[in-house]
Length: 208
Image (tube, rainbow, N blue to C red; front, side, top):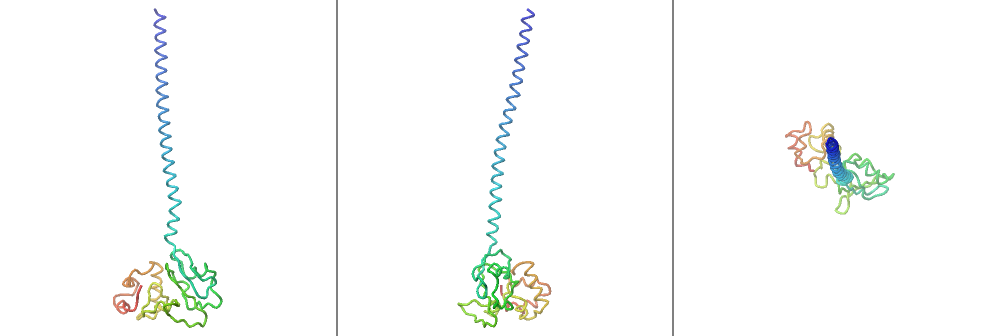
């Protein structure tokens, strides 16, 4: 009788052990499956983020590109592809630089360029005639309608405006380089020492 009881106890103990091992194995296997699923999801997310990071810089770069047409006394006249904010001197460098005959005193090499702009580099001693079929120098471009473009005018052009001397012309250029192009002619009043009185003298003679 005691042997039967001992065998039964052993059987029960073995059965309990099997159940415990089976339970542990079941939960461990289930957790591994969950981890694998999560890992796969993480890989998809990382892959998506990597793809986005590869696309974004290109899109940003394209959105800030401008194309400027440079003609006249330049080694390789044509269209220069630039980044927004670059200047005339950068465009000339991309096109091989100016020719020896180029009159660089008549252009503003520090001028910030705009998309679709066309600039003519004159020859030394050349007389520029402004016409519908000929793009002239910056000076004639700025004054073709009698008004000065405060976004592109250099210091000498700004000084032709009433009440604008060396100091104020420098402030206008500094403001433009710091804040970007003027969005309206009224914005020029944000320049130090240009108040309502000076603006009233300027407003009929300036444009953007």
